Length: 383
Ligand SMILES: *Cc1c(COP(=O)(O)O)cnc(C)c1O
Image (cartoon, rainbow, N blue to C red; front, top):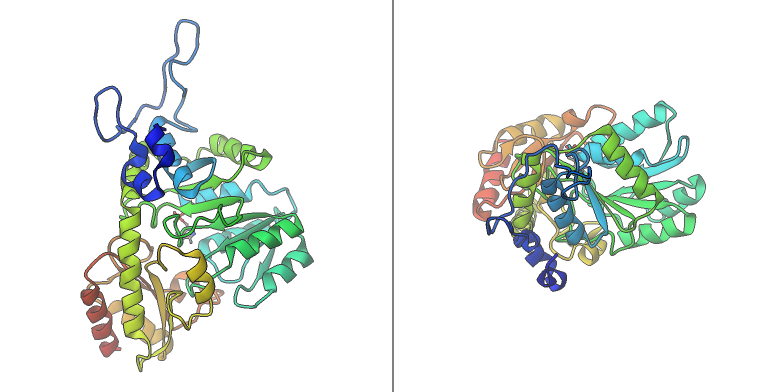
């Protein structure tokens, strides 16, 4: 890093991709290194720092360095998807040890944990983030090796107090890992709040354009667990392609402005929808009546994000109708892109999911606020 980079604020580091230009050409934008292999000299010594692109090439390293700087960590690894990153974290847990996670969380990660549990690889214990004190009680009862939290959590946007969870983890000897996908470092720096590891589906906000599948884990410390994770990363080979890594760098440069606009759009939409006669609830951490609002206001310093859900009074049929009736919001899964997406969530998660039948998830993009509000209002009229 240049001396400039060491004092610059995260928004500046992101915009300038760590101020890392190409010394060979003077190009302002660092190149995409596609090479899978790297030269050795006459003494069989590597000419540069790398030898083979699994585990890491220069473009992957650059993207990982940006994320490390944004999260205030000491090291990061990129993966081929968010779930591959989650697998790498779970793989650091000793056989038979307990992972404590949320009743409501990203359904893919929960399914993965349930599978590891039924295979007897780990023991899965759950806490309900909507019950005060449940995390502390379950941590004392189960003595987990790893506490895994997601905040705000899919798809009801329950907020978990990261600093509080870190305190509980310290008291019970657990490691705290945070799925930071829905609260990227422009709004929450989980490591600063006491987490040991932060995982991201970079597919979502970090890239932000719905055109890259990638994941990442950032660590607060170099330790045995991190060494095992890096080992697993290199040995299992769930690494992103160079094009994905390069696109992720480009995506992260606009993270701060995208997130600000998405947060403003979501807040305006949530406010406009509050009290709508066809809705049972509007779930958004930015609304003062959201149960997690006070904690969110404290730990989401760069905005409450673009994600909200509504629960329609008419249940599953009306939720399906709503999701099919928008014109600006595109009906598709995923979150965090610059285009707005809408989804009737329960059919995606399956019958075992605790998600209400009438829940519709909205991911606000960066379009004009009035278009988003008008769109959902006209769709609700058709319900
Ligand atoms: C999408 C998502 C994941 C999984 O990431 P992929 O990149 O799809 O593998 C994990 N956690 C959360 C919160 C997500 O939204």
